[in-house]
Structure formats: C-alpha cells, structure tokens
Image (cartoon, rainbow, N blue to C red):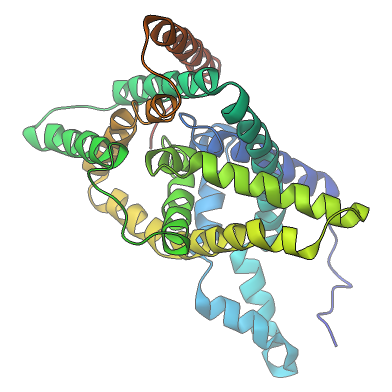
Length: 320
C-alpha cells in the first residue's frame, strides 16, 4: 500500500518553472565566477532553498522510510512536506541537466581550446571577486585579516602547497563535499572550488564519459564495463556532495549567522585567491610566451566583460 495521493494535485507549471530555476542555478555553479546561490537570490527562491536543504535530516528521512507502517504514515507525510521535495526534486533535475551539458562542453574545450577556456575562467573569477568585494566593508583589522586569510588559503591550495588529504576516491569524495557546500552560498560556485582543487577538468571529463557510455549502452554499441569506470567516480562525487550538503553547508550557514561580515570576507577572499588557479592548466600545456600571455589576457578580458555585464543586468551581485 502506498500513500494516499487522491487529494493531491500537481501544478505542472510550477514544476516546470522550478526545473528552469534548476537549469539556471546548475549553469551558474558549473562555471567559476558565478554562484548558484547568487542566481537563487536573484530569482527569489534562496530562502526556500536554504529552508529545504536545512530540513534534509536523517530523522525526517527515516520517518519517510517508515511510511510503510500505517501508524506512521502521518509522520511520513509531514516529513515529506517539511523537506519540500516537490521543490527540491525538479530543482535538482534541472541542475543535473545543466551541469551535464556544460561538463560535456568543458571537457571538449579543455582538449581543443584550453587557452580560451581557462583564460575566460580567469576573467570570470577576477571580475566576480571585484564585484563582491565592492559590496563588503573593511572597517576593522579583523575584516582585513579575514579577507587576507581567504586569499592566502586559496593561493596556497591553487599552488599545491596545501592539498586535501588522500587521493583517488577520497579526494573526489572531499571535492564533492566542498563543492556542493559552496554551491548554496551566494558569491562562490562549486566549479571554482573544483578548479582550486585541480579536479574541475577531470570530473567534467568523467561525467561526460559516463553520459556517453550510457548513451552507447542504450543504443546497443556500448558495454556495462564502460559505464562502471566513470560511473564510480560520479557516484563517489555525488555521495560526497550529499554529505557536504548536510554537514559542511550547515557549518558555513551557522558561521554566517554568528559572524556574517567576517565569514563573507573570508569566502570572497577565497574567490580572489583563486584567480590564478585556471592558469595552472594552461601552464601544463604551454610555455608562457608573449603570444600565449596576450591570448590568455584577451580571453580573460572577455570573461571580465561577461561577468560585469551580467552584474549590470542583474542590478548588482550581493554575497549575502
């Protein structure tokens, strides 16, 4: 016996609109410099997003799983409503759709046009740091210290002086936890975290390979083995993301509630310190000749103009 849904109706227009929100948010989070959290603020559903994510607790999930018991179905229904799954599910599907499309594009461009891709990303990150720092105040030494700490930490991570512990699956799991946590914060994107950790291109390629292998399997020209290899990477990343969403994201939100200005300055400092991170990908393939520097600078300028134009159209980004 399932839940009695006879009295429930689905507003398909609302579902489609939420899916569209997910497309916008996923596109932002798949690109460094633009945050999915900022998109949520601009489109007016940030408060609902945070409330829904905060409601994702083990207790409510257990209550839903126990819904097979007739005596516990009222509690299961209440838990489903509290978690706002009718909002989170289409939003999540939209985000996954956008990330999948962009991952395929990024994977191809990283192979064919790395200078254009990473130069553009450098400009996006630099411009986002400028527009976000513009809205913050440095009114005390503590403010300057918080911003400097974020910049310094990002520079150390980007240059591999500081590395996440572990490698392989452990690193992918931790990258997922950190990236998804950043996803819900206005001003900082999951893609930027992955670039900072040196995992962005690799994970984009793995996701692209996973989707291609599934498509080949469905068409009859692929194999299960071809799906499993990149699929394992995707699953580990998603598991890390879920853990990050219910743990690290909550810690950051509490930090924002307790010391909002200092936390925001630290987070935006992370963005500023991440500016050179995409350049390491260019450095791996090319020597820094005058032509390469000029071409990279030109594409960085395109990224700066694109972000500033978006900032003007949106009426200004706010990292709150």
